[in-house]
Length: 421
Image (cartoon, rainbow, N blue to C red):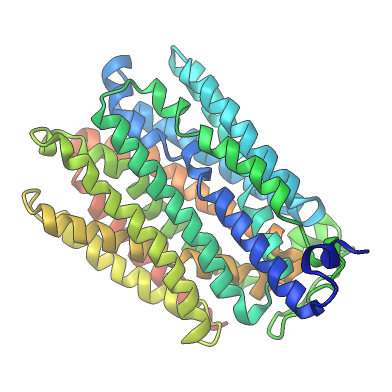
């Protein structure tokens, strides 16, 4: 008796079993990723306390924040390809557990290098989830519904930012030391990783179902026996895919500029007389979560699974919103909440479309490799943002952040335009 018949019962058709399992896999992946950022985006909430207690400049802390992004990007390049060869179920679980341990090791650091080293290693641990998880989704969801599936996946990732922003704001309001930012939130990731392992399966064949049919619009579909070198070669020579990669780099620069430095802005001198202002920042990840879900749905339902058009539209609008935040007086708290929500919605929204482009352009058998290459460049760009923005803030204050990010969004919108499908 197959696992599928055990789960669904003998009276269920294969299509009913497939529907049940692909929803189970999506929900399991979403649940795990709901807590993944507790092991990485907690750093932004620790920066102010670390600066005060350790005496580091914003530029120094920017280098530490960039360490996790560099190793995360390198890990994406490696683990994306491994996700096409090995079990995403195992890789995602191990990544979450390794991240839990490395966060605790970071919390006991007493010098620049004893913090820098484990935090850099944590970046690689965190990189073991996204690309393999994306490959898992492409095994279960077809091209015509993949934008929606990736949208929900990104919704969970955006909601993970909400989780860490709420926890971080709460711990900041309690005035706990920076060490606890690395110890408490990440416990949720450990639990979620274990649950994930027992809930999901890598592909339909693992539960006795037939594999998914080939995508209609995929160009140059790969064969399962393709070597790692061949997958990398095909991915790196496709000009449409490379344009999408560069566009995501500009988007990622803006995204991590917001995630890491908005808490610093809200805890800075402009809001020193209002300690509760840190809660304003929660509007940012809420917007991110809803934006990711909306853009994926938009690309499938209104643009015929064309991903580049909604990317260009949302990135262009985010350029305008971030410029408005730059010129907005800090006293306009209500307007600031709305604009932060919109910036999160518009900057993070295109993510589901970027990831859906990977199997759309390169085929399901290269989905992990393509996702890893794309994410590698995204985090190289994000890593550059750390010391660059930190140095600029040291010189001009935190408000200049939004002008820099506005320009990055404009470039991201321009680069994606030549891609039609």
